Length: 433
Ligand code: ASP
Image (tube, rainbow, N blue to C red; front, side, top):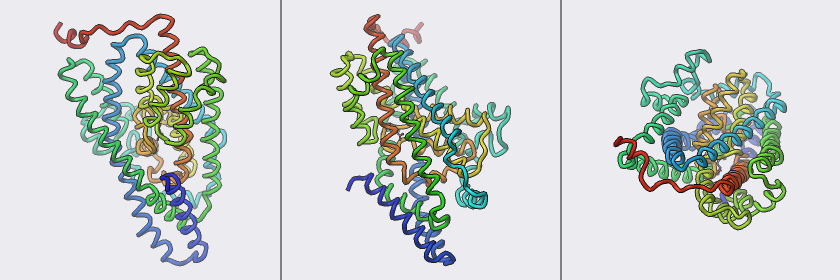
């Protein structure tokens, strides 16, 4: 049986059993006890398996991302343009999602008693991970972004500080001579790959984790959140469609200067692969082949832009994260100020860069965004059951975004051809100056 079928089965069985037992025996203590002492802990343990990957994946991917930009910068103007395009398209996508979730409020209408109970059930982990501490926002929030002690920041999962440290650390690596930075980046690459393996293994356990979490939730709250959940799926999919048909299509027309219709038609193979694998990484070979054969992108540009895009450029993921964090904030009754929503956008973009291009790669990081603005990360349980289908949809947009970047860079390159970097290592020269 395919993994996503198993996850869907876990969701349906958990929901039917949890909600069904609660409906049959509303006052029986044993139903809740079963949820709290058996199903819940199984789900929580699985969630922790994902959470434990957060610090290493953020540190390795952001550090390596920035260290890689050092190389990209050497490649010249094109590298800068690639990064700029990634940032622009991801930002537009995240903003579309946020606007939509604010307008449609899919998580609204949960009654305050349920909200309080939800908070009580799930709020365990919020405290220390919250931006600026539980005291809320202020000038200190910004000062606290600079950690006094990076190890303490990691231990406390103070994510803004960890991201800051990783950005600076990656930047510093680009200033070292290559023979000094290479061993460090090699180790980080190995660590990152091993962590991605852990995420892959954890995803194989997802059917059981999802079963446990949904059972616990429905045995406690019945099926009352089902309406909101359906609305949430609609909002994510609508946002992805909007970005595809308006945002990304406009970018394709303006930057790559080709007709969006031609783009979407020619992109069929990678879109289908992304949809069926939920992995930007797994779609990379198809995307490179399509760029070269259907759009005559030069192999050198396809081989440069697309691998970078598969790890760093995730339009759909940023949109999904923004919508999900705000949706769960609405469900939990957490009011997010404009400043906090801006933090969500920035973090959604940054964590979309940091997420691995594998199924569920963004989930651990999204829990961090949630906690940073005071939404219990364990509340992710509410959306996990429907995540697989959303992963298929958002990965499709991620991959389309990568392809559009390759077309844009290829056009620029053809207009003023790319000059290969000099064989000497600029950083070595610089260091010996
Ligand atoms: N599955 C996504 C990708 O590979 C990452 C994610 O959003 O979980 O692009």
